Image (cartoon, rainbow, N blue to C red; front, side, top):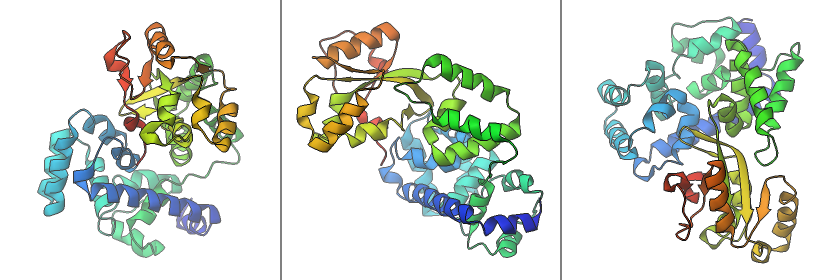
Length: 331
């Protein structure tokens, strides 16, 4: 590959769609970071999507107030020393702190370790400003989009097929044995093949990206009725969205079980009842009244985590395995 190859890629319709998606993702992370006082664990999801696993793994180990304080310090007066304070506090890699600079100030700073990602195109630049000029990029978000664009090799249909297999994993249907089989295949891939798959997965389904890279996913039981009635919404959309967001910090959840109260359909309108009917056909969807009884029973028996705003005060269970719904709500 060469500069001509990159120019051809930049003119592709598929790349333009990808570029816009990456710009939106960076802008969302920037918006979150520019308002440090409103940061919470779920908002950090958008930051980690750009900032990467090094940051996700290390920042979540400490209280979010620490990150808020250091970030406000940076925003008040950006300087290398203040970025260094944050880096030293969390022991972040150089490329991670460089990417943080990029998110906050994409017109000034390039993403971290950009040359590593450009090597797949057979090029290397020692001055990031040359890249802006060479390819007429408006800012470094265009470079970020190029770094994360890996067209699937048409000569390697197995990669495409394997990607499809990962994306076919259904938290309510797929057996754990099948997931383990896919995981074994993924682990056997070389670094380039993993990078190829991971970049595609990040852009398509962040949940599946985290799942296939997880060393030990945990089972989870969802209090379906409680989620539907969350904040008096009486809508099923939050529950459906949750199926694509089953992770908290470093924990990734698979498989999932949903337990509904038997009368939950009466809280829904006609359209949502039809959706509920189809959802009920899944293998790991159950009805029980009271739902709390079955939820806590399954959690104790299978050592699964739980999602509910109920406290289950009448039942014995591991309190550390209960998550509030808000931890899984994307904002």
